Image (cartoon, rainbow, N blue to C red; front, side, top):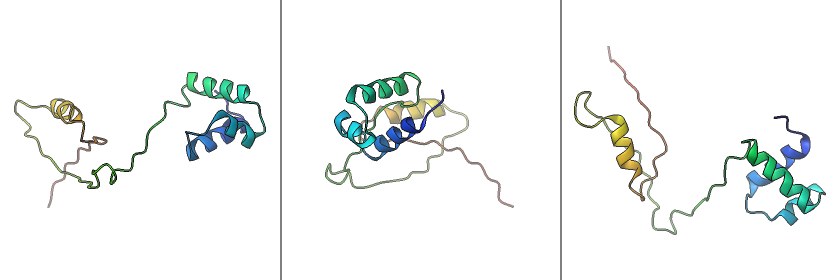
Length: 107
């Protein structure tokens, strides 16, 4: 898909505030609201816009603590990495974003 400068400007505005109304976007880009909606629809259909995320104030929700954990699973055992990932993702209070596997040997 080829993006023109208007597509790029629209995406920049949406990145700044995805909750903007079509009227506000249209005014900023000197376009009509239907033209904005058509572009957004096309960008979604083409997979350029994958979705919209909600950015919560974690402190106001009583979730102001961020913890990074290092967890080592046995190489042989009943729980695989996939099982562990599935179990952690099932806990709604846990934001599970990254699994990184690093193995080092010290000399």
